[in-house]
Image (cartoon, rainbow, N blue to C red; front, side):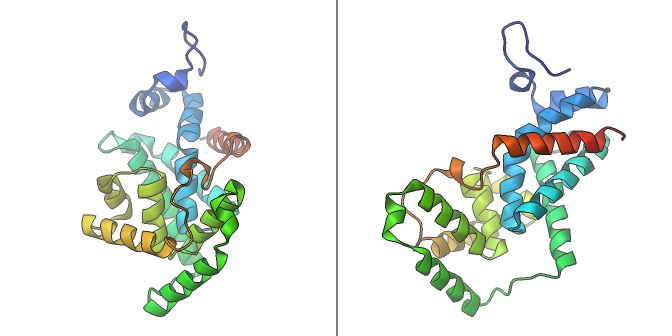
Length: 222
C-alpha cells in the first residue's frame, strides 16, 4: 500500500526502484503507480524526441508501462531499471514510426533546411520573454532530425550519461558525442544561452495523474 511513514515521508521518497519492483513481484501491484509517476517525465521527453506527436507519445508511454509490468519477472535486475524501461519505450516509438512509414532523410540539403527554419523562428522577444522562449525551444527541438533529437533530449534535458544513452539507443559512444554536437549546432542559432530545461517538454501534474490512472487500469486485470 502506498502511504506515509511515521516521519511523514511518502513511500515514493523512501523506496528505490529495486525495492518497489521486488514488492510488486510479491503481489503489491498498487506500488506500480510509483514507477509510473517516477518516469513519466523522462519517457514523455524521450518519446517526443522520437515521434514528436503529443497524443501518440502518451499512447506509446501507456503501452510501454504495461509491457514493462507484464515483463517485470524477466527484468531480473540484470541492468538499470530506468534504462530497461526507456528501451521498451524507444522500441514502441520506433515500431509506431515504422507503421506510419515515416523516415527522415539525413542529407545536407535537409539539414540546411532545418537550420533555415530555425533561424526564421528567432525573434528579439525570445531573449526576454520566457514563455516565448520555451515555445521556440520546443518547436526547434521538434524540427531536429530524430537521430539528433533523441540524443539531445537524453543527454541535455534528461541528464542521462553517455553509457546509458549509448545502451538505450544501441549506438557507439562516439556516435552519442557526434550526434549531440550536431544537435547543438543545429539549435545554436535560435537558442538563448540560458534556458530552464525543467520547462521543456513538461509532463505536468494533471497529465501525470491521467497516465497513472490509465496504466493502473490497464494492469488491473493482468
